Length: 173
Image 1 (cartoon, rainbow, N blue to C red):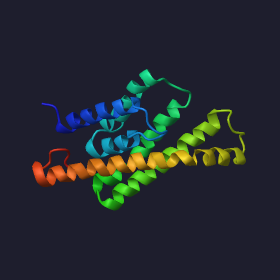
Image 2: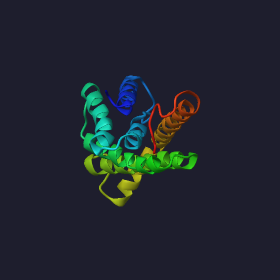
Image 3: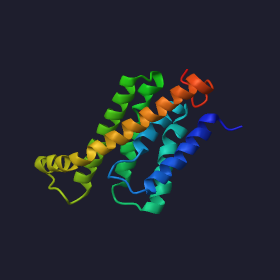
């Protein structure tokens, strides 16, 4: 019998994959939150980091690849590391903190990648700062999507555990 975590996460994978195809504001996708959730739900690194990468690879095969994809994938995996904090303790402050820190990690890494790998900005400190400043309008979308999905999933999990069936979604013991 399949582990319930794999079944539930598989359903989330399908939803997240479909959401990547729906028109949305730039950077407003649940992929970073899913990378955090994978770390909290699974014990084995192959699942913790494999599921988010699989979502990205499969959907990017349809959407298309670009030269920054390795940077984006690495940034998503690094942002997912904040899930280890939530694995130990999920509270309002740790969920919010994880969402904010992971969004910052993604912002810093991907925009550094844009600066290094593209010709859009001069390879100077001023060019790097210009790259980060130009990306600021998109940052709030990342935060909203990541924090919103984390609170939604953890809130749903709490409600299910409390009112319906204990340990249905995932066990944090």
